[in-house]
Amino acid sequence: MLELLLALLVLVLVMSIAFSTSIQGLQLNQANEAISSAQNKARRVLEVLSQDLRTAAFAVITHVPFDSNATGISFAQVAGGAGYTVTAVAGGGFTLVSNSPTLTSEIPAGSRLILVDGNGNAVLTRASSTPVVSGLNLYTIATTCANLPISVTTETLASVVNLMGYSYDANNRKLIYRVQGDPAPTDVAYDVSNFRVDYVYRRRSGTTLSEERNPSGYLVNNRAQVYFTSGGAEYALRRVQFTLGVQVPLRGRNVERTYTGQVDMINTLYYEARTVSTCNP
Image (cartoon, helix red, strand yellow):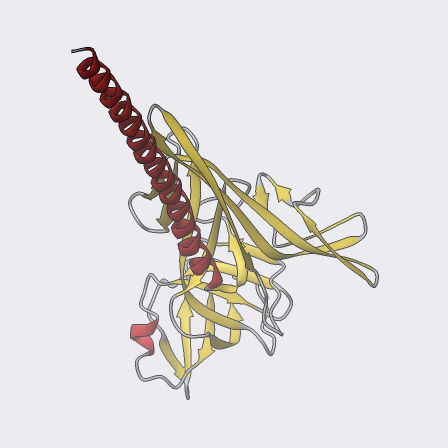
């Protein structure tokens, strides 16, 4: 009987150790899956955001539908071709060149537009009418802006765009996305513990070039500028960096992981928007 009891005790001890080891292995596997899930979630969100931002027209940020600052960013995403050459601007209308037989469907009334000239001026507005023929391959478009703040240069272009943006809702711990004109924003990520946007500028002082992240003066009324001057130096936005932290609940606690990304805001050879105005977009 004593030997039987000792054998049972040894069996119980072995089973307890095996069971404890199995439980620890399952818990470790669960923790690894939660961490991997948090990382994948953050990476997917930033990949989508970065891909959207890479299509920003003329590499400019805007403040529609959200202000571009430390917790949000908006931009004009190209919705059509590379742009139409603008030959004249008068009041709230402009004339462009196109030999497309479907131009009226390419720029229907209500289309959101960005116009940029070779002097660094850009404006976001909306077409109030379809293009009207005004000459050979010339079309005039009226906009919702009473007076377009751009001039006609050899490089003035107009493009059809979608105005979109991402913003962090700290109260509800989620990242939201919105396209201008949509009735409400869309939730793209939950359990977001942190979302930060940093703006990296090229600083030019005389012949000296350097880079600065979030330099003093880059925010005006809590809005990031694409170009500004300070202390005799010029600052032009060159890169946007993102930091996204997400949490996954695990056995009564939250597993948090952070993912970072960046997008270069490289302008074309002829276009470097220094002022971006909004006029009833």
